[in-house]
Length: 296
Image 1: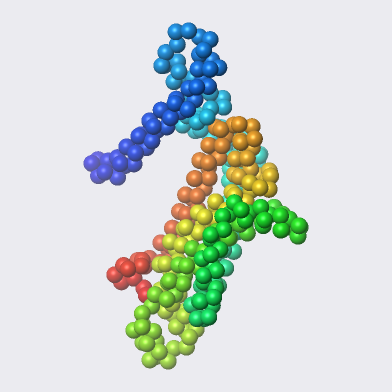
Image 2: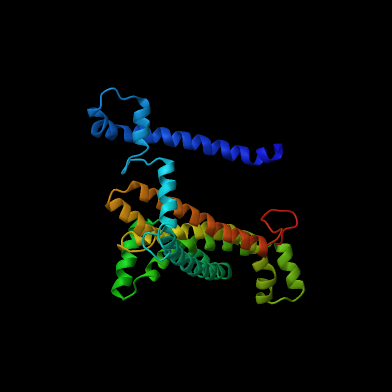
């Protein structure tokens, strides 16, 4: 029982503190509207009335946690999965763009890393541009990509996946460059004494040594790709996706809907990064950078 509390206790304590602060912030931010619109005409009201009303507003500045939970569950249970009112439908649309962009970004990052590692000229000329590409805010580049691809007749899932890939490829490139270069001189000279060719050295030494560096980058990449997919839905006026759900909530001032969409986006991000972590455990058992016995 004590060991269970050591595992669960800190998390439960932090969660309880966050909920208390959240409810207090909801009272503080919603109180001016409640006092002006409701309680100003009701003499004799007290703190209990104020808290009850601030936690039950239809369009609060900051919704209470139970309001978000109720809207989140209602949007999933009360509507068919294929309905635009169902959060799972929007999560599926966003996840599809994220996964496609993640695959494209990972492939691009891997190709760039291999080229940079095997070419000194590309290392000097291309790698600085890879780093500089991330200095451009995605909010600025997303409408440009949408407009250009839309003029070419490419709409729907593909433009959003391009934005997702733009955020995915950078961590993969940087991590793979470091991982492919991680074998030391002794390992490379040992393969040279065995008369191993460059392709053999690449597949037998460099690729296994890069895996412990690659998977943490993939976790970062797929989380960034989710952000890119949501951002890609914002300037398009999309009818589906978590970004579209956020836009709809902002248009109509439905802050509860906005927060429930944010909760779904967080859960989707956890699910995607968790899937990559499971793949890492399956493909690289016992392999971690700097861990004794890890593959180099």
